[in-house]
Length: 360
Image (cartoon, rainbow, N blue to C red; front, side):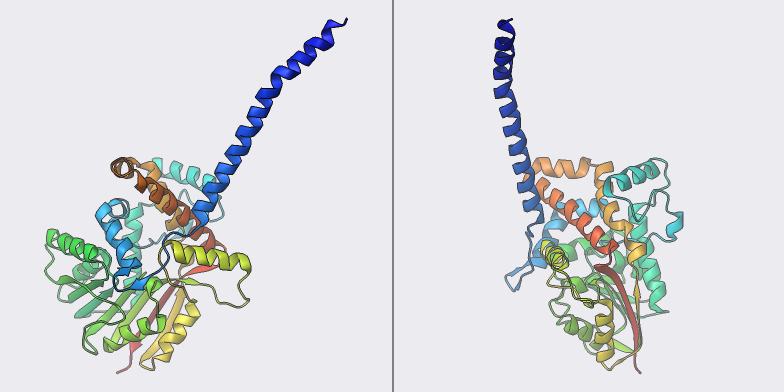
């Protein structure tokens, strides 16, 4: 009768170290997860515009050299269009990330989820149609990336001269190489500052800016400079990420999110769609200024950018094996893409479209 308490006491004592060890491991695990969360949510690439250390040029040079972005995104380094949304098998705007991935994967395996690269070309086609441009003879692509849209415009208007400009020497070189491989002779690429373009007033019949305004430290100068080089009667069309109108005022949480999305991908700041419209009207040189919100039709792109890397991981894994630190960059970019998706979905960010015709 006296032995049973002793046995139970001994058993409890034996379990004690295991329990304490498990608790310690759990605490260390939670601490580790918290540190990872803090690391992910601390922006690592804030905007810098110094002549010798321009963060936008540096990031695009790096991405172009790595080749990972081109491998997964193709020629067009911008969002895609998923119209008509009701026909997009495997997509539901309100899904959480895991549900969205599972739904998209089933659609992908059945061949019914829209091709990621095709969606980007569709966006360029829809942007051109929306611009109202008919037969431009001189075109400038402001912020041309590796030249996907410039080459699309060169094919669309074979009698036109197309110039793509970028801050990144690596992008300009790759764009020229791809144009040569495609046999295109009516497109060329230059390393230029979009806020101080070397072109004469009224040079171009079509001024095209797709997802370049985000990186501009002076949005007013960006719009004014594109307007300056636009010929009378010519078309200007711009696609750009925007923040919502600041009324009601941004909450503390919203300001934290905005700071993150600015500084993780080297953006100085965003403005609203309506603010861009007012900048266009403020030039005094543009007629029929129109704006539109294309958030819904581009929203699937953010998560699709993550999913294509999961469905076909071999390319980025090879890159990570050569340079292990790049894996951390891929992890950060995936996290950032999801943050952008959520901010767009809840209306803090918007996908803005702008167009106008220059007065004659």
